[in-house]
Image (cartoon, rainbow, N blue to C red):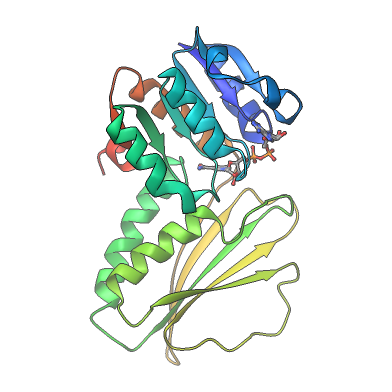
Length: 247
Ligand SMILES: NC(=O)c1ccc[n+]([C@@H]2O[C@H](COP(=O)([O-])OP(=O)(O)OC[C@H]3O[C@@H](n4cnc5c(N)ncnc54)[C@H](O)[C@@H]3O)[C@@H](O)[C@H]2O)c1
C-alpha cells in the first residue's frame, strides 16, 4: 500500500517503522513545517492516509482526504466537537474513514470489559466510580480521548452520572477536591514519558474494584492503526476499531 502520514511525530514515526517492515511504502509525510503545502492533489498516488497530528489540524486533514477521495484512518484525539459534521460528510459522499480514540487492540478489549462492568455496577448504588488517566507531559488534550470513551460507556449505563468533572494534575499528591454525586471524575495526570495508563475505579467504604490498561509502548497503537489502514481500503463508510476487531 502507498501511505500518507499526516503528522510525523511520535506516532507517525512508529507507524512508518512497522509499515515499512510489512512492505508498505510511505509516499508522503505531512508535519507542522510543510502542512501549508498539503493539498488534496498531494494525495494523487496515495491508497490510504493515516492522521496522528494535532487536535487543531485533524479536521482540516480529514476534509482534504475527503476532497481527494482517499480513505483516512484518524488517531488524533481532541477534535470531536466537529465529529457530527465529519460523519455526515463521510456518509453523504460515500467516503471512507476509521477513527478511534485508541487503536490498541488491548484497549478495545478493555472498552468491552468496562461496558460489562458498568452494566453490573448499574444494578447497585453502593459504589462511586471515577477514571484516572496518566500520560506524558507533552500530551495536548485532557482528558484523553480514551478516558472520554470510557466515561461515555459508564454514563450510558449508570444514570446517576450526568456529567464529567475534569481534573488536570501535574502532581498526583495534590489534595483531593470534592465531586458532586452526579459528576463522573476524570483525573488526568501528566508525568514523565508515560505512554498511557487508564484505570476505572469503583469504590465504597468496604472495598475497591479496579480495572487498568497500561500501554507498554506506542507499538500497540501503531500496529492497530496500520491494521485499520489495510482494512479500510476498498470500503465505504465510517468505522471504529470495534468494527475491525469484531468484538
Ligand atoms: N488513537 C490512538 O490510538 C492514539 C494513540 C496515541 C496518540 N494519539 C493521538 O494522536 C495525536 C498525535 O500523537 P503523537 O504522540 O504522535 O504527538 P506528537 O506531538 O509527537 O506528533 C504530532 C505531530 O503533528 C505535527 N503537526 C502539527 N500540525 C500539523 C498539521 N497541520 N498537519 C500535520 N501534522 C501536523 C506536529 O509537528 C507533530 O510532529 C495526539 O492527538 C494523540 O493524543 C492517539
